[in-house]
Each structure stands twice: as C-alpha cells, then as structure tokens.
Amino acid sequence: ERLVAERRAYEQSRTGEQKAAFGRMLHHTMDLWYAHAAVTVVLLTQLPDELPAGFDTTRTYESRGWTTFERCSAELSHPFRLFSAGWKLVIDVADEAGGAKTRLPATPARMEALLAKCRFTNGADKGTVLALYEQTAAAILGSLDKLSVAGLPLVRGDVWCSPSRLAEALNYCSSLRAVAVVGARLDD
Image (cartoon, rainbow, N blue to C red; front, side, top):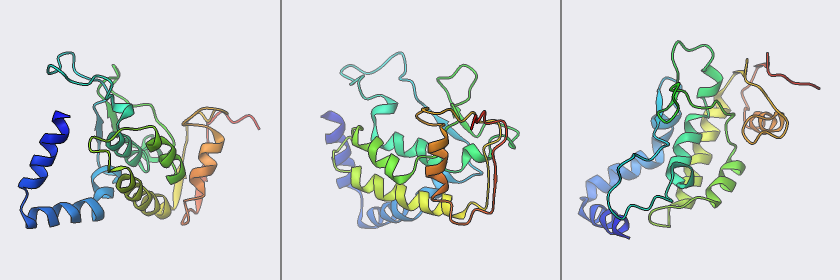
C-alpha cells in the first residue's frame, strides 16, 4: 500500500517532458536494456537478510511481473551465446557460483502464462509488460540467424529446458539459418 502511494507520488511529480521520455524508453528501448547480447545481466533473486519493517516478504523475485519480464527478456539472447562468452552473461547473486540456471527463452505465450501468476505493484502493468515482451521477443528471436544450445541438457518435461520448449522458441526464429544442438542429451 505504501509502495503504491510512493510510486503514484513519484509519477505525479514528473514533468511532461519526463513523462514523454519515460514513454519513449518504455516502448522503444526495453530490448536494449534487458535483451541486448552484449549486456551482462545481474539478477537479484534473493531478498536481503534485513528488510524494512512491514516489507511484504511474499513479493519474491519469481512472483513479481517486472522481474519476470527482465529475466525472460535477458534470456531471449543470452543462453545462445553463453558457451562462447568468456564470462557469465546472466548472473544470479543468490547462486554461490555466481551463475544463473541457463534456460531456453520464453515465447510470448509462455510469458502470458507466467505473468498470469505474477503480481504488479500498481496492478495495471500486466498488459503493458506482455506487449513489451511480445515486441522484444519478436525483435530478438526474429533476428537470430544462428542458434546454439551446445551443452544445454534438453530434458523431456523440464519446465525451462525441454525439447518442446526449444521447438516453441524455434517457431519465433524467422531468420534462422543454422541450429547447433550438441551435447543436449536428446534420446530420440
């Protein structure tokens, strides 16, 4: 409740120019912030040990809409380049090894299902987030010409890394010319 009030007060304090700039950023550059292949993404998936009084501890990273968008957007391009990079491209600070579990990208339909389970601070961003993700997914997946999931185990029934999840993602890769599926432990 307090967070919603603070957010409204902040939004009302913006000038018309600031609101226009925010709108341009929100609708025209989100793919650069989260899904660009040259950006290292840091996920803060664990709540700190010390929280302010009254903090809603049920608002975890996985339960929030914007953080779901941020992670899934980062995963649109990063898992495919992970094995050729000299450093971790997606870092989860809650993981002792510093890495995040590599997952296949979520399709817009999968994102819609994920967002249906998420909470948003103001309760009104779900449609905006889904539209932004659809735009970002189309731009990123649609521009991939090579795809490598080398070394990523594809396990039937795995929520994030199954052959069916790969097939779903491939449907969005309209420019794809080459696919490398090596060491994926496929058994068919």
